[in-house]
Image (cartoon, rainbow, N blue to C red; front, side, top):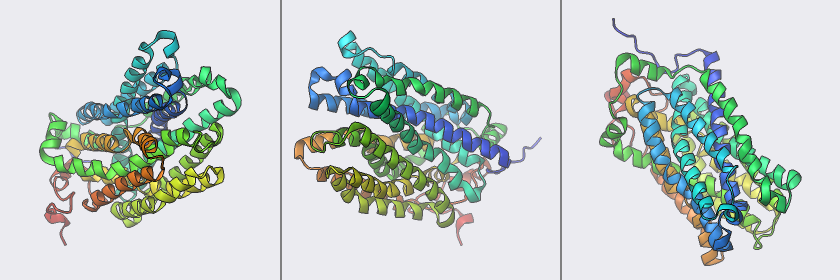
Length: 459
């Protein structure tokens, strides 16, 4: 019997709401875990795990532990992409969620260097590697569940929900750490035991995320792939054989936003703003970063709405333009030592961050054909994270140590933004393209402005 192809978006409104809840809750849980680690790398890990190396080298080593986890994202992306394109999106979402939660909880239980010596930082690196593998597979599954269930007219809005989980995870992580440093375990108590609590609390978010994700239906696109036997045998191999250039361009599109977002609102700011050069209080800075995350989240949502109205590419160009204009003023305000100016700088900078992040789920999903889509979006995202945010806090710290000037960091982020601005200009906006496997031929062509468009897309 012939199988009638399912059009993407052919799901009930109630199921779409469940999918939206599942993607944002699960992604928030994952990134709460990840940002808890980056915040601890800025405030605690140099003292707890790397104190013997001295303050400057210890800070670099702590941020290097963040970067190492990024290096293993492609492995997570390959594994999740391979099995996500073969056995389903939902199953991989559950696996990555459990892996991230277990790794984060164990970090909160680690002995210190003073207790077990060099074994402590080695165990920390191992758990950071597992976090990186999980993060590499999480994003692709979450955005595909959101986008492939969505009405094509509102695909960017649906895709913005898992995107919002990143700043929301940062908001929760910095908020909990601010509570620990300012109320529950101020001063030395935070270094002694308070830093562990945010890690241990992740188990609550993981349980909630697991229950919600188990309740949603599998992606209709994958259901059609399974029914019509259109799944690739080795998706990653087919991806690079047919779409290698597209993966590189997609990775570069993300690199500038990731470098700015992860370094500026993550690990570098708490470390630099609380250093003697600036002199702000630890809790005050964490609350400011939490505020910046809230602004970032709002503009991520707004970008999803905007991308459905004016297109993904145009929204990206506006976002990268805003990010580029704000980067030097932001770092000048950070360097001023004024808490009020830090809030103002984060406000302006987070606008561009959100506008250049909200459309990503829809843009990536519409770039790759159904048979390799999970692999395509996951691997592109992971490679972009390595090029952008992997060692951004460490690079920024090294630049400040070498030059004594925050302008060097601003120039670095501005350069990364320009690279992504050029990369997104090479992408063709394919808003609303049919994501069904039955449209594989059209999906195979036309994603870059240098590639020929399919006949159906010509006017």
